[in-house]
Length: 70
Length: 70
Image 1: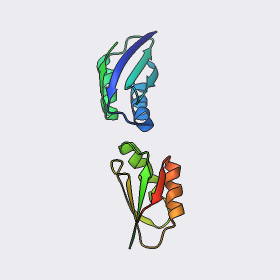
Image 2: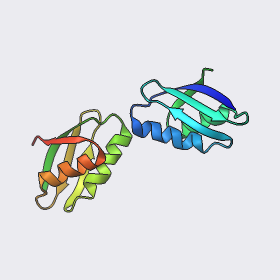
Image 3: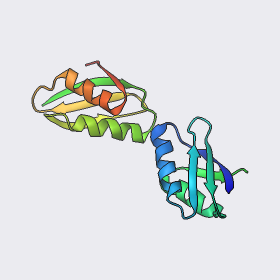
Image 4: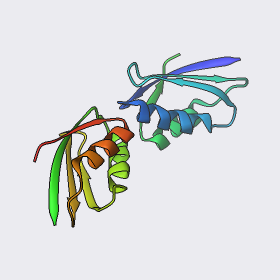
């Protein structure tokens, strides 16, 4: 089990969280997604390694910007 | 043509605006809806009179609170 953390800027409400969650959940290999508009924290859980660029592209698709932090 | 104005609290982004727009547009008699998260302003255009309580109920359905201002 792997957990990668990202910071996402621009989310302001539950709708924003839902948009990010929906896109990141659709990335191949992702098993669980935790996201908070309040903290900007995005935690992605997967069994195998998921490419940062895929997660960041999914967040971009939702309309926000992510950077890997841990 | 009638235009009624409301103030809506709690909207923070375009998703919030879209939720309010969708619900208020569905109110019988409503022809056009302008809504801004930045100002909280909701402008409802209709050919015939639309009850404030129907607009306010639609905003509530979207998850926000509205008061009639003009």
